[in-house]
Length: 398
Image (cartoon, rainbow, N blue to C red; front, side, top):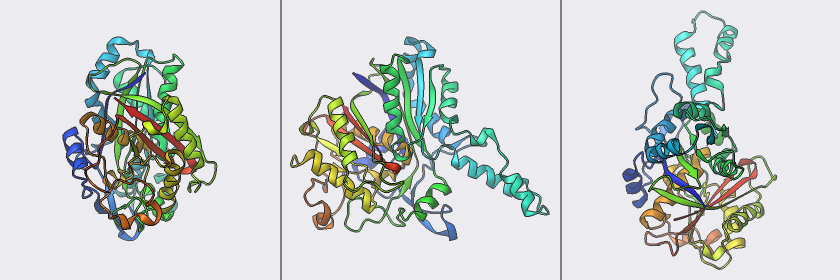
């Protein structure tokens, strides 16, 4: 058995468990605020920025978010450091944006404070784009966490777009299974950046209004910041833990950004996770959908539910209308949501729509549309489907 000890995450929903629970229970979509400065021509869009955590000085934003999360892993980290040799404790972090926001800030700072107004444009560009290893190192996230904790096991950063944190969990388990590590500090982090927001807008995937996953009128995603960590091990290291029952992955190899509309490879990831957990489709009591709010993603996920879960009427919903799409951190943020549902027997996250709002495409699926649906058993599957068709399914229980 694999335990996720002290699993904790932050997002627009909150930076404490109490805050997260309050906003999750109330289906609070008002935390995604209309924000400018990330799109051209002073355009604005709803974004989930974690304003309560400020980045100081030269601190790197994604590492700043992870350092805050680390404070909530004290029990499991103390037990791990006392129980295992330091070279048997690994670190695996998933991210999509990595240090892009810090690169942007570095360039802006140089542009505003360091450049002589009399320089030529060529000189300015040469100064702006001078390589700085302290800012541009993509793997720096995991390295800094390892250094901060003084652990010496394998340490690396995974970037598979929006499935990055799920792939980090899969990689962490592989390190334990191969007897390279006794435990792994694992999770994901992603911060807000102009490259990301403008990039999704250029792709036509960004909604300039509140995202409405699975609704007939959906037109794109909202982006949010997020970070989360857990200590994975075969031992219980904290009173606060859930079980990682199974996992499965696949790749569409269909298109750089669009999913295979048949959902066949997503089905394979889900079926692999069920087999890994020694479970059947009827054992799942809730599916936390990737549910970005784009036309193509949501339609593809509907196909997976139909093909794998058929007429089982399993409740499904997304939580990205609450957190924003936290990209590389999405899987760990949503794992935390699943953990809260399991621990506190919460009502399932829901979409405040009428049936007519979704019946055209999803009328045959048990999409949660009201705030009174409970788990029938303590088993949840959470899906992450990334650009490039990188698919991951995780099954949690207690």
